[in-house]
Length: 354
Image (cartoon, rainbow, N blue to C red; front, side, top):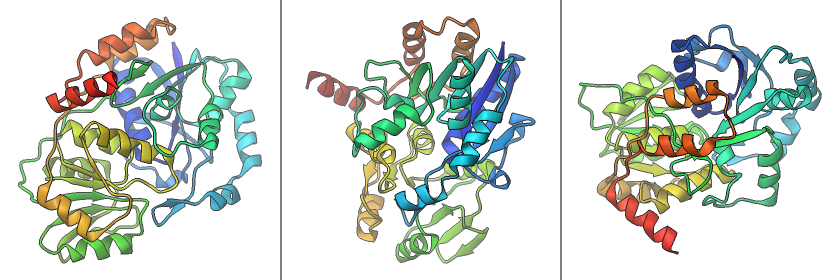
């Protein structure tokens, strides 16, 4: 079987999920070619496992100061380039397009009649799972941004639908003791984040940001983006403050890290992520960055630990078997290996009863 894998590159979570799958496909000697869109080609990092991957411009949402900028998104949309990229992407010879919310390969598959399977967190919102701030425009975008023939959502719970759990690699062992709080707020102004953290002088922070350079300032250690050092610092952290992206939130709750989320304003997915984790009792949520509220969380932070599968071999074997209409057996097998804290089971029971 020959697979083409399209990955949305605007968020590191999409790429992290693809890395796990790429390593498994390599173990199984499965031929996979990769396409990444949504960010400049020179802004990708730690991409060795994808071999000779391709990039295109794609479509991405513009944000500034913690809020989606809808006008800027439309102004930056290069529609003619997108249409040309779809037309020029040759998928002949491929048996399947795997797609993590990536529009170029999805539309190319649609036009060339190649089977396309969505494996994304966004696909879970095609089912009636808990949401926050979902508008009719969001629903239209979900349906048409990256169309697919088969939808497998990835979420923290299946809610009774064709949704699979995230695959989380085991936590990197870090023997270095640390009292630092991990901070990853890439959609917020670095200057504003700095002003908040320096005001919390009784605590130490390790802050990753796209605009950061490696340096130490007062109680903050700033670090440029690097997947490997990020994993070590996450393992050593005593808590996580982040926007409400899916992948980092998944890692934090699987590692048992207290989690404080400030969702990106104007983006329903992050609001829905924060809402869901709050419903499950696995995170605290701030609508805006507020020093007093952060300090209150720092004083009381606690956490539960969720066990997600680390090895996607069952999923990869299901893909290769080709019986893609039989999603229930896959879902049941994967969720059988997930373990929640008792308080989460209690909350889920109450939600079902309601």
